[in-house]
Amino acid sequence: MEQHIVVSDRELIKIGKLTSTVGINGSVKITPFFFTSDELLDLITNYASELYLYSEKTFPRRLTLSSCRLSKGTVTACFEAISNITESQDNLGRSLFVDNEVYAEYLKKTDSIIKYMGYSVKDVNLGDIGTVVGVQRQGQKLLIVDDGTGDEKLVPFVPQFIDNIDDQNKCVKTNLPEGIFG
Image (cartoon, rainbow, N blue to C red; front, side, top):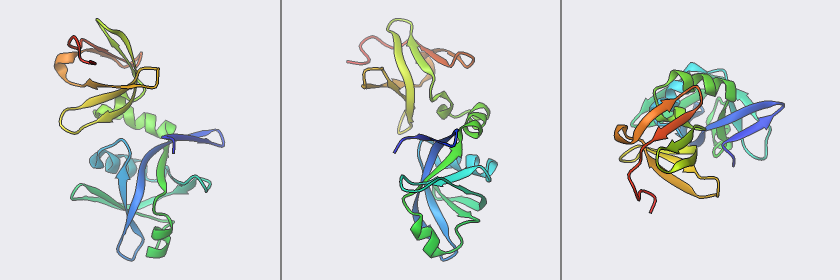
């Protein structure tokens, strides 16, 4: 499934997936797509009425968050439209989306590395590397960059390799060590 869909001229961005039920009241655990659990919690609580549930076989369904919490690194949420365990089980595997405008607003406010999704990456020696299509945060922070040929490159997001970040032009300028890509 794509990370974004367009429905009725509205672009929706995938932010997570409903992965398991919790209790009998319809609570569900949500696995983040690109975000950390803390970021997902922040996003869904700040935009509680701008969430959509979708699977490839259904039309997106607008949800309103009624409560959520973070426990042991996992986001657990209750939605007004999912009120019991049967309904939550029926929705497992579906993806949670947010409107693109809300997503863009959130990215402007956050200090997270996720805000660089869609930025171009240009190196002082290597030139145009590509476009940020993902992030990886295990160990050091890495930008996952599509180089335009279908290959992805991992670019370390560490201060010693970042020359400049131009938010207006959505560009990360780097000075990467020689031979970094092989």
